Image 1 (cartoon, rainbow, N blue to C red):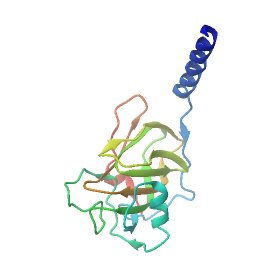
Image 2 (image 1 turned 90 degrees about the horizontal axis):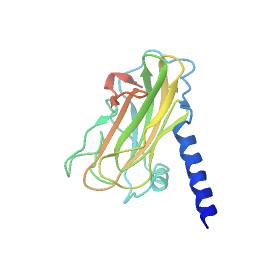
Image 3 (image 1 turned 90 degrees about the vertical axis):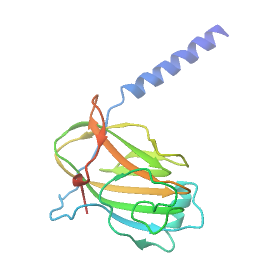
Image 4 (image 1 turned 180 degrees about the horizontal axis):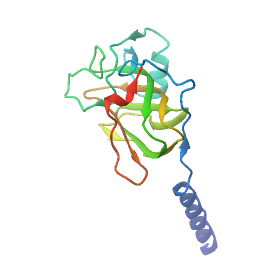
Length: 190
């Protein structure tokens, strides 16, 4: 029994060590690099009768979808009950399909995370950098280290949903090992 327990601890330690030493996700810049972008991000909305998961959010986007006013960026603070989610028409049961670009001013390794209420599936430069499949108050996703190979624009594709009461959506970034801060709206283009 002691041998099995010791072996189990060794496996857990190896797994934890490999996670801690995992290489950052390498982002792929937009090619060609876009020019003449407008500020913000594009967004399409769906308004299902209910939404509790990313699968339900994806399903809602197969039906009545409408373009919404562009997002100024990804700094939408926690709302009060009854305030509209993002730039949508409703406060509750909102699905957003967000696309555009984010600009990194220099190459390097960065830590990215999101604050979300509720679900989120965020892909930047071809890599999954944020995910939460469920319902929660405005809380952080797991932080992810990414390698930005060169300064420039990187494609953004985000699926987001908000179910009941309040909503939020933020993106934060900072150099690896440093403090993450809000991504300024000026970093986003469409």
